[in-house]
Amino acid sequence: MKFETLFRYRKQCMAAAIMLILLNHMKAAWPDGPVKTLASFFYGGVDLFFFLSGVGCFFSWRRDRDPAAFLRRRALRILPSYLPLILVWIVLQALDGGITPAAALANLLGVHGFMKITPAFNWYVSGMWLSYLLTPCLAALAERCDTKARSAAVLTGLLLLSAAFWNDYELIIMLARLPIFFAGMLFAAESERREALTRGETALLLALIPVGAALLWEFAKYWPERLWDYGLFWYPFLMIAPGACLAVAAAASALERCRIGRSLNRALGFIGSFTFEIYLTHLCLKRFSAPVFLLLTALCTALLAGAAGWLRRTAEKRLKTGMAP
Image 1 (cartoon, rainbow, N blue to C red):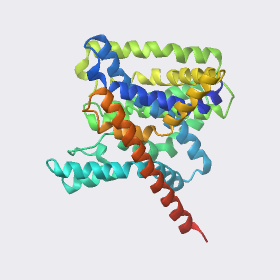
Image 2: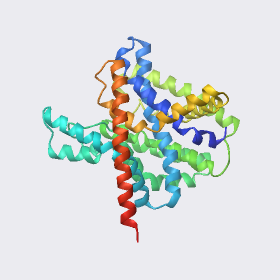
Image 3: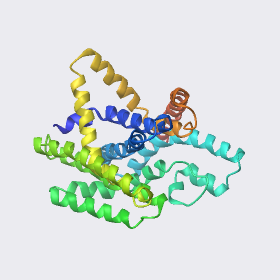
């Protein structure tokens, strides 16, 4: 399979990831038993995000290798969407029981995931900042991993690093995703050395999906109390995420052969352009029943995306004005 296929249909992969996350947060509507357990695994859509983010961050970093410019581009993507929502969230927290100035500031900056404070918004934004800050180092490592042995050694090192934070939920939930983020960078770096994966490599990555899923099932069955504190809920996705993204990209490529498929791809690409906004808004609406949850998520996403677009354009104009000679 050509690397270009994965990169071309990256937005469709992101759309699939956010739909898995939405299904996960509707699991209250699923019947008890194996079906509900399976739905809980759909939170792995976040891990697909980290893999795809690793791909995108590698190419973004390679654009100019300027850490300040890279972080500025990431901030322009994240903050216009995050700030309006988190400001509303902070106001609501202040009205509903209160929030300390320190907690408000930590949530506003998106660093609450590194601090044991309450109330705290979702950890994902802090995890993104961690990935972005480490991108120059990880991208350099990915470029040097020109053999499978080197790639495996770095991935093992990142796994061992995360193990140092077992029993620290606020940190392990982020650090357990670094190997997946780096795996995306390895894909991007390898695409600059050759055009495609071999058939054997593609088959192996696809075969690892059921292996990772089986591990996840066994962990949930025999060690449910250790899933979160020991990262067992996330480590299997290092095996699942690459192959899953390849499978979605291959399916999207196949859909291009017919008119209905092309229309579906355009719809998925549109959804994939706003996954961060969908992720942020749906977190505030999980208490509602499934139909209301989906409707409110769509409406709030449209509002947030509109506000974010305006803020982003305004910030870009000011930056260009400030940089003009």
